Figure 1: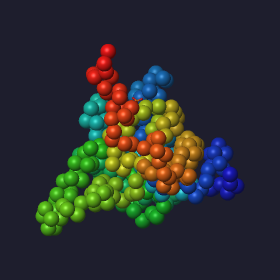
Figure 2: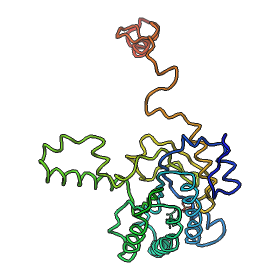
Figure 3: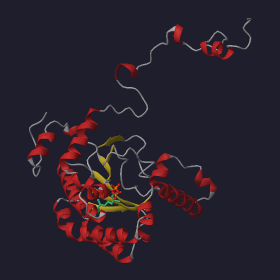
Length: 293
Ligand code: FPP
């Protein structure tokens, strides 16, 4: 419990923040924004109304994350599958919404010292949107605070394919096959779209779905997963803080053990594994085979 609350948090946010440990905030949070369509359907509105309402959630979440000192926030704005499989009218709407968001939010991004980046195959997006994206990226490139990365036309599998291509290209230009022997996890990470970021510590998914949906599959290897039933257009900074509170209750082990179990302890004889035929598995597999009747 702490008294110092960063400026700009509203009353509800401050209440949750007071219970957080500021020294154990996740450095990088990734969010799968989901539920816009359902939000609109519940209100008998067209799906795009959910996307439009989702922009306020983006604004609130980004500002709160920056105010509490999160280093990196990555938002899954739309996937390669969304882009290729949704009706053209919806995709066109999302493109216009993105272009408008970038223009309208630039002052707020700069005010909060936020640097904008993108992941995904940008070059497949409409040219005017690409230009707007590049303009917004450059206009925030001097900022030194939180890195806000928008995943647009993003697919984790495509990212891994592109990383393979990039590795092979680098090998071709630098020592050929011999160069490939130097490939390790760090080298692979350097060829991913996220080379500018540490791996996420926490991934949040809204609307209750328990899937990663082809998002940052390599980078989320050790991330804590927080799923909330809140639909994205209802999500606000306070919900992000609730996710962080849940994250701080978890024990991160990266495949190892913590506390008293971390030290090497002898295995009691009755639990040790021997390779003899009296082992329970051997008995079970012999049932009905050679027992005299
Ligand atoms: C998933 O909801 C959401 C999307 C595919 C688009 C996300 C876009 C926004 C939040 C607004 C714009 C974002 C920026 C960065 C300007 P869904 O349509 O799959 O919802 P459903 O599962 O309920 O149908």
